[in-house]
Image (cartoon, rainbow, N blue to C red; front, side):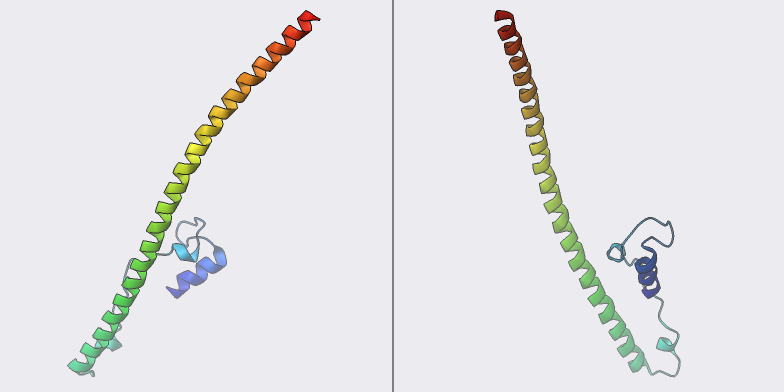
Length: 119
């Protein structure tokens, strides 16, 4: 994964599709195959079990971190959706006020024309 991080830090694009991206957008979707040394025949079964246990613990920690990031992102999405809803309401209100303003401007023009006729 380090090579991907380096690429994005330097190029600011996806190495596959060249879409603009950031390091925080990377999601690991695979696990590296175990090293051949990890399962070498010179290791005892107990050593292999200990190494696999450590690898499992590391994978669990990474998974927990990913879940934490997911929860943070989901919370941010909810906040942004709420903000969007509020902004849409403001926009609708603004449109209503703009229409009222146009109507009042027309009334003012009509009033000015009537005043000019009376002179």
